[in-house]
Length: 480
Ligand SMILES: Nc1nc2c(ncn2[C@@H]2O[C@H](COP(=O)(O)OP(=O)(O)O)[C@@H](O)[C@H]2O)c(=O)[nH]1
Ligand SMILES: [Mg+2]
Image (cartoon, rainbow, N blue to C red; front, side, top):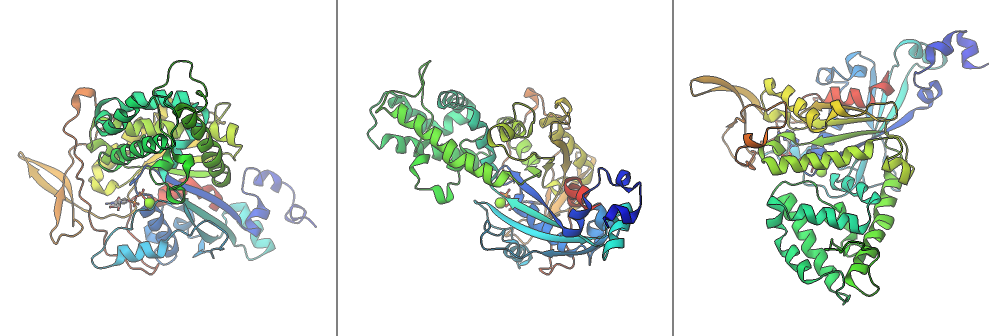
C-alpha cells in the first residue's frame, strides 16, 4: 500500500511544494558553498556555524531564528564521518582550539578547498511531520555539506567567456589606473619591453607571470584590492609549478587572434586557453555541480574604510561574482559548465561586531546597494538573492564615549596580543556608496580583536549576530 493511500486522499495537495517525503525518510543532502573575497571571514563563519549547530540542542537560545531550533524541532546535530575519498576535511576542531586557547587567536589563513558535513535530525512540521510519524519515528535527517574555497577562484568564471585578447585588454586597462599602476610598475615595465611578437625563448613567459602574480598578491595583501584574475595565481597551491599558469596579459594589436607561431603572444594565448580548459572548467564542473545554496561573504566595512579605490574594486568583484549567479541564456555556470541550478544566494556583510548595533542595518543596506539588488532582474530563472549583516563571532562590547560634546556609540575589544581594551569608532556607516567627493583618507588598520572566551566542546556555542537568520534563509526550507 502506498503512503498516500494510507494517509488518505487530499494529501497530495497538502504536500505539493513541500520537501519530498521519501527524501525526508531516507535523508537528503544540501550543499552550501561558502565563498567571499580573501579575509572576508569564511573560515571563521564556517567554524562558528558548525560550533553553534552542534551546540544548538544544549544552548538553543543562541540560534532562535533558525526555525528548526526556535520551534524546538531539532533532535540532534552531529558531525558526519569523513570518507577519505572526498575533499580535504575542513579543520573545524583545530580552528575552535585556536579560538578557545589562551591567549585566544583566530584560525590560520586557508588557501585550499575543504568540506565538512553535519547531520541534522529534526521533527518536520505540519502535515509532513504527521505523515512521518505514521510511518516511522517521525524524525527526518538533513545532511548539510559545507564547502570552503578561496573566493579568488570565483573570479575565474568570467574568464570562460573571454578570449586572451579581450582579457589582456581589460586587465591592462585596469592595471594602468590609479593605485594599481604603482603596484604593477615592474610588471608593466617588463611587458613594455616584451611585446607579443617577441620570440619565445622559454623564459620570458614565466618571468612575466611571476611579475604579474607578484603584483596581484601585493594588490591583495598590502592594498586590500579584490578584483584579481586569474584566481589561481594568488594561491596556486598544488599548481605552483604547473607551466599552464605561466602566462600574463600583454599589449596586443587590434585583430590579435592566436599570435604568430613561436612568439610570446602565441604561447601566452595558448596557456590562457589551457588554464580555462584544464583548471577552471574541471573545478567548476566537479565542485559547483552540487552546490544549490551559496553564501558570499563581504567585508563591507573593511572595504569602506580602505577608501574609494578599494571600495570600487570590491564592487567590481561583487559584480563579476553576481554575473555567475544570473540565470537565463547568459549564465556561465549553466551554459558552459552545465552545472545544477543555484537556488539561493546570500550576500552577507561580515564582522558586524565592528560597528555598534545601531549601525548594522546600514551595513546591510550598503551591501544591498553595492550588489545593486533593487535593480536585479529577479525572475524565476534567477537564483533567489538576499543580503544580511552578520558577525560570526562577537568580539566586542558596546560602549559610549563623548566626542565634541556628543555621546556616540562605540565598540570596545581587546586587540590580539595586547592586555588592554581599546575603543573603536568608525563614524556613521552610510547606507549608500559615498559620493566621489565624500571619501576620506584610506584607513587600513582595523583592529584585530581577540575572540571571546569559547568552550571547545559544543555545548555553549559562540555569541554571534544573525548566523541563525542567515542559515534559516539558506537552508530553512529543507528543515520545515
Ligand atoms: N571581530 C570579528 N572579526 C572577524 C569575524 N570574522 C572574521 N574576523 C576577522 O577576520 C579575519 C579573517 O577571517 P577568515 O575567516 O580567516 O577569512 P577568510 O580568508 O575569508 O577565510 C579573522 O582572522 C578575524 O580577525 C567576526 O565575526 N568578528
Ligand atoms: Mg579561510
